[in-house]
Image (cartoon, rainbow, N blue to C red):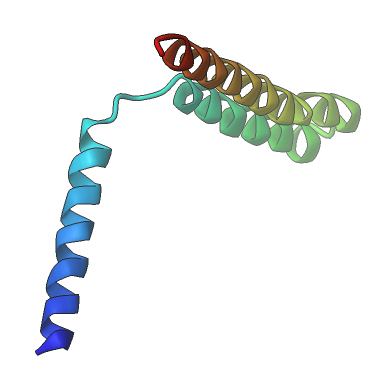
Length: 89
């Protein structure tokens, strides 16, 4: 009987997690992640198809730069929200 209760609670947790994920708006990091993927694909194109190895490496460095900038901005936003929440006490 306890196994059934565990399975029911797991499915309830999974359903709740799905509802929460559906209610979360798209963050600013999502478009940046897509641009990073695009820059990697463009870098591969330049490197392998066009034969421009230096250009391909240069464009390939855009992806980690964009992801690092997005991460920094998201962390900064979280810290600001946290500080605003603590100042209400």
